Image (cartoon, rainbow, N blue to C red; front, side, top):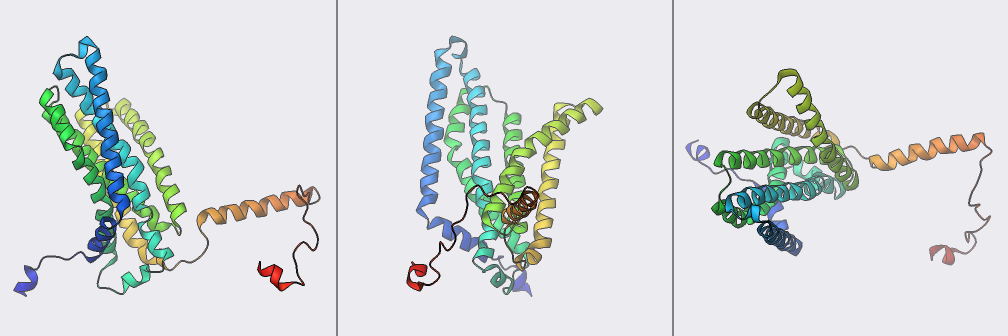
Length: 288
């Protein structure tokens, strides 16, 4: 009993996911590409700000480039994270290996949690790669420690939010394409929802910036928790649902609707099919 209490918890699925990503050369190529783009953009920003005499003093340069770096991190988050996590569960479904995970001692929440952490860690690695740039910017001054902490904490909660609903899309969808499209659609819609909600709350309650920040962070954490619970609840249910992806079902319904509409006008054919075009009586040509 005492040994079990002090035993370090094991995360076999997390270890497997990180090992697979570490063995892929594409992972390191993306990191080199990312740090090269950020580095070039960083040098270009310094050059542009030094051209203007009003930006000569380091305080102004430090504050401006700090926000530019934060924007680059958020763009990386939007581009990279949904594509990574939206295919984490659907890829297991397509390989028919998700059922095998249920045969282990891992519970659904452990599977979701380890998949979530395995998707978040690579994005955090991108953030750690930019720390030298942030150190240079911080040495110029112009940035308030409180603002830096708020932005970094907002970045962490944004990662949790995007990762949570991307993983939820992966659980609820049957194919990679459907899950990725759904995750990117939510990613595009979410900022507008937060902006509209913030404007309405500001008009109703006349909130301060600190209060708006607390509400925003709380909303992100609640959304992350909600998506995590939905993923855990429907993991087993969605694992055994077989059928065509959502997009294919939508196109089939559109085809059936168009066929009904076309029947009203006499089944018009734009491209007429040739009769006996297939070699019914020649099996070798059919095989070819």
